[in-house]
Length: 335
Ligand code: PBG
Image 1 (cartoon, helix red, strand yellow):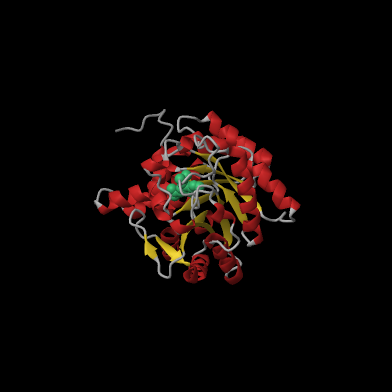
Image 2 (spheres, protein in one colour):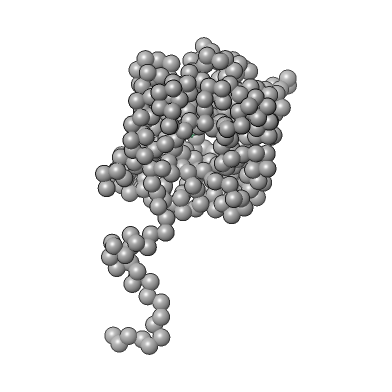
């Protein structure tokens, strides 16, 4: 066929070889963009988590070695989540402000042995409450009490900063918590401790495996209150932007969207609405579903993993919390 004189746009010209494709790639994922969530256990041995293949809760004695290994791979950040012994849980989550609790011991261990690792410490009550809510209930028992919860979170954040965490990461979605935490940290001289705010955290079905991992699954006898009373409705985009702008105004250093894959439009929207660095949490259910499909032979694990991370970066995330961090970095360093 003769070339058409007005054939102008031949986009395939720039896709002809792997060299030109690589030279023109607009988005990169590198280990430095990733933060590895780590589950910590009181027990002496690692405990595999069935719904998170390849991920185990780690004993305190193995935490520093894991962080050292991650650093060698180019992963500089970890997000810590403790699995609290049910014996220490109660309705008001008081173990959260016990200075000798598991999470605080984990932070001290890491910062003492591997000070270069950036520790992002979760601030929320769900690992500590018997009912699994991120806050304390009000006197009616019908709702999570916002301001009483914020008071506890502020104490928790202060202990966390004292233990040496580089960032506190409030994941509770109470109103006003970022401002209250920033104020208290500054009063106590912790001006260098950052806040990574779970700004747009949706009431999502994708958190299932995480709740297995830390034992915060809510049981029918825990009552009718749902996390939808504080986490954002998945239907809402404008509300997510409002939350993000509010957290920025209250003093957050980094904003976050969670989950990531089903909320790429929210990432893009917040990317454009704020100049703050933006993180995304590729949550447990996103990781689990890719693994499950790969186990069935229906998806290629590595390619799907890489595409999911690339898409989150393309949507606008600077940083990604992902259970794939270590496996991605191992492959990246080999390539
Ligand atoms: C709660 C919290 C949750 C996750 C991180 N922090 C779950 C919840 O709201 O129940 C989920 C992370 C994941 O699914 O990987 N503070």
